[in-house]
Picture 1 (cartoon, chains in turn purple, red):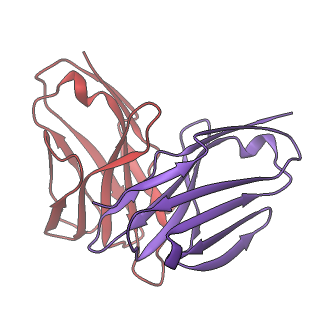
Picture 2 (spheres, one colour):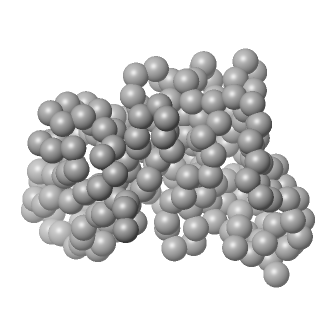
Length: 108
Length: 113
């Protein structure tokens, strides 16, 4: 089946810093989504981005489907950005497969 | 408020017991799914459904059953609980192509002793 790899696995930032999270996938995908899981365990959908670039406030995402990767940019990080960021892909059928996540901690 | 409701939030079972995790959504979403999340790992798909009466297996279906008798409800049954099923379980739903983002429930933390 399709493999989804995220990097880095862990990231510590000083508040105000910028960061880039990466998601690589092993096969062509129909769609890709980014999620944030906050420290209380709640999962929030950030972007549905099968290709191209989208922006929402300080967050933006780019997917290059032909090269099988997606990037999530966080600018001017805040402590509330802490948590785990997951990418998830759908490759045919109806199954959505998650990567292992990037654990982000933003220090005040 | 519209969304995905999971119950219970916490549960402790003894090995061999059975139970049902409930999931309901009020957004008229056709697609619903169950995931489990283990420490330090992503979410792994257990079962999913693309509509009432239609279910299929995900990555880790063994030891779990599902049914989808209505659009709103998608319960997950543990047939004979094992310590390996200790995990946090999430139910999710999404709409069709025009509304593809997932909505997750708040999770059920299950411990099997």
